[in-house]
Length: 97
Length: 320
Image 1 (cartoon, rainbow over the protein chains, first blue to last red):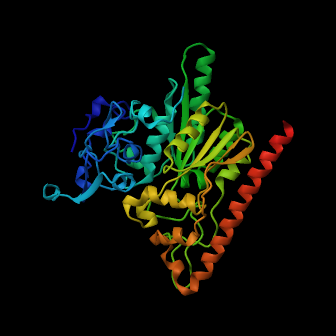
Image 2 (cartoon, rainbow over the protein chains, first blue to last red):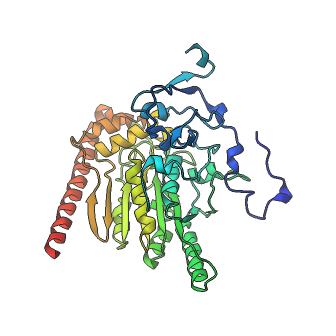
Image 3 (cartoon, rainbow over the protein chains, first blue to last red):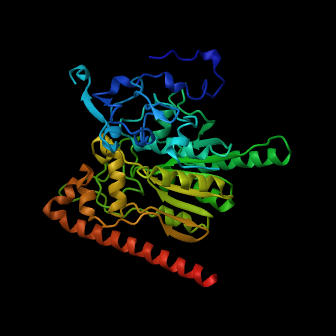
């Protein structure tokens, strides 16, 4: 669990700062892990635009490894990938692949 | 210049962070991400309000917020009224020369907060002509409180307050056509969109925020919990909704309707109903006739849309 703001750090009726939810760990929700094969990936960013958890970082127009701190393992990226570069593997069995 | 190129958009700041508590596979955050990405272009800043609903409770868990834009959580019924006030204050500040810069005012609401409870404030804000964009993410029931029926729930769907059983076949009433109701307010721009066509959705958002006056976007948002489907098919369901004409993609700009997607082969509504467990009971022999009814109603709606588009095109040609 992330560190929360102290009571006197907050404005009345408001919240500490925008985007602070980033600190929360939702990776524990996962049953399946998306494994991306970057050799097959064509960098079309179709996975990035449909990720509900903003868990696919893009730098300089290219997607990077999925952010496992936020990914809930819904599998939308794997279904939407036009070249099947993403496979869903049961959590804890990634190494067997 | 506004763009919908994914490569170019990926350089924009991500205004909705991960770590929020929406269910895996939820359509809501996908929509919000796409809307915020598109709205912040041309140097615009975004100010948002959101009515109580799934997206509000899951993205603003006290004391955190997943939004990197100023956001106001209003009550269930007044997302549009809240953004009206913010927009009026902004106009006043601009007139006094105390603020420069462009702001896109966006009100978010679920279908409960838009079709039903927030309808009066939405209607009022549209009528007063504030310069804002209202985005309804329509997941077709009150999902946040546990799948109760709303005005947006389609005919035949199971919800906890419209259950199926020996007597009841799920919800008996038809879905309210809110986009048409909003269009009847004479707004300059309103549209239906879906996250399976992100570039179409984002073009509509850009058009809405660049248009002076009230604009409305109605966006289909699949709900794995309430619709009873696997979380990974969320976007595929949106596609199916467009292909079966359950959720036609169209826009009405200054009274002229244009359909943005016409399926090459219109799929039967059976495929849509079969894809979700909330419609499971419709395939029982005693409910089969309802499927025919639903199909007939959809065909009539789609026919009306096509006729309206043809009529509007004709009118435009005549006036030229």
